[in-house]
Length: 348
Ligand SMILES: Nc1ncnc2c1ncn2[C@@H]1O[C@H](COP(=O)(O)OP(=O)(O)OP(=O)(O)O)[C@@H](O)[C@H]1O
Image (cartoon, rainbow, N blue to C red):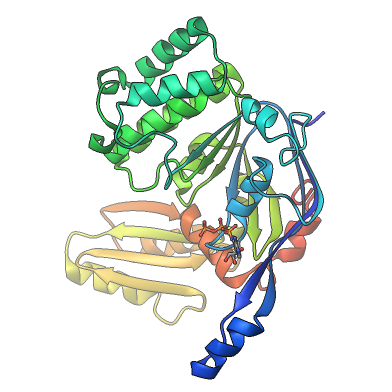
């Protein structure tokens, strides 16, 4: 039985529309105009114990609203949500024992108090035994390297230090599921890497199920075996990141370096006017960008090697980040949508 089960879920918010002008403001006061916003539309998915899933989408797509329904903060307008056998909004307290939540932008630590005080409060709230508390604190603080921060007021911590303390806070009560909303946002490369390796470890070694929202493709590549994409409240993709890469990453770039600018210019001319191939020159480097489905890589490489004399050749696929933003931007209509939807297991 799946650990998380979401069935035909919809969430509609009612908002008040402000009318323009002085009379409009007055009219809005007496007769407010209501408008309904569907933040989530008929979403269904199931997550098994131990999975690690990326939940992606552009701003305003409905990610936070979904997570709020999974954590019981919001009640769905229609459909059903079940998390670890409970209906979250009806069993908020019991449900909270099963889940840990980390919101990149918000804190569950008390700002002016030492980190440890917040942990002790959480221990009390979640009725964690002192023994369990001490052993979890020691184990996690060790790996996250936050032992030396225990007596520091939270407000004095750097963003990276605070995030590591937040993750520890979310795990003190041994939850089965961890919801992470942008856990690496705003962090430098080293801090991101520390957090990723910790999250990976608790998923692999402790079997904690992960649902992660992120705009950082490295988070996904590193942590998640499954990707769900939501756009305008609808789930448009549920499958592997590899599938997206294989089917949508059609753009590829050959980077050829030459011994001087003249040689680079001469090489660029070889591709001039060729349909579906774009060429850029930067000093002695030529970048040839093309669609793999239209043009054979071997053909371009042969031309380069026969007619020019590159010092170095490297190939690069389109970054996943660029790829997913293109999927958001263009939607799946323009692209091989049918292929995507028809593919077995792509959209469950
Ligand atoms: N309390 C609310 N009242 C009215 N509309 C809301 C409310 N919460 C969210 N919305 C709207 O629902 C839609 C989805 O919002 P949501 O916060 O779930 O998106 P998101 O994918 O998490 O975006 P982001 O990446 O910016 O956090 C947006 O149009 C948002 O304006």
